[in-house]
Amino acid sequence: MTNDHPLLYWCLQPLLLVSVLALWLTDPTREESYLLTIVGVQVILGVIEHYFPARPTWTTRAKEKVRNVLFVFVLSIIAVIIGEFYRDVLSHPLANFRQSLGLDIWPHDWPLLAQLFLVFFTSEFIWYWMHRAEHRWKIVWRLSGHGAHHAFKKLGALNFGLNHPAEYFLILLPSLLVELIFGVGAAAAGAAIFTVTQTSIVHANIAMNSRGIGWLFTTNKHHICHHSSVLEESNMNYGCSAIVWDRVFMTFLNRTVEDAGTGPTEPTMWQKFLMPVKEPDDTSIAPGGHSA
Ligand SMILES: [Zn+2]
Image (cartoon, rainbow, N blue to C red):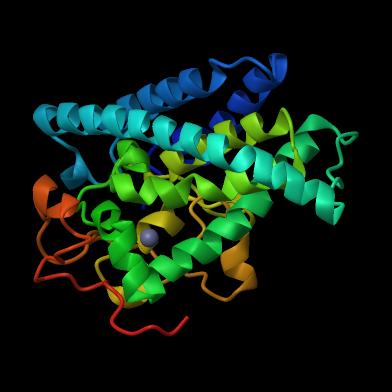
């Protein structure tokens, strides 16, 4: 991708990340911050994608955009319900687990930002392996409905939340496990805000730089490569927010790809919903075997 708009190319990702962190730090316990961040980041990225798209052919029509917004809204409600369910059933057992194993080791005395990045990179480590399992094990691919997230031929910031409802049972787990097992506290909310900003940025149809920032954090070049319709490219870059684990475990690929999706055509929304039970015939990136 060319940097026709140097300010956006060099500054957008770091500026958004620093801004959401600074806003969160003004009141780390404010409950509305997560929702306000999602809306704010999505509006900013949506407007920029509209006026300065990296791939003009990926710009969605108004009708598609409205449909995607509605889907993200409904899926967000489903995610909240699953998250509350997990908290209800996991909070006490995991607190007991922490006490019985003496896992009261969380560094509560560290600066909040340092704690935030500890939650972030630990959660991303867990997500790396879950996501890798989705792509390498057919049973996990199908049951999670992860193919639905990959099925879109046009990507944009809104794709951060366009996952199969079943997949939210997996997506929500890593950060929740870290938070509840270690009794993290306020930093967990900051990590959630940072992560949702990152997952929005990495799907954005905007030309952005990958050098420097791309050593630790996933950029949209990395993640769009993961959304490639070519199996060898989609089977790389499993870290959706932190790319460092891909570098550590040798699954990093720094390549610009043009064609996203699960195959040459995009399934309908209904076909995407049915992907756990019926894979579209032209899917090219589903795992065939079970090598990890
Ligand atoms: Zn994936």
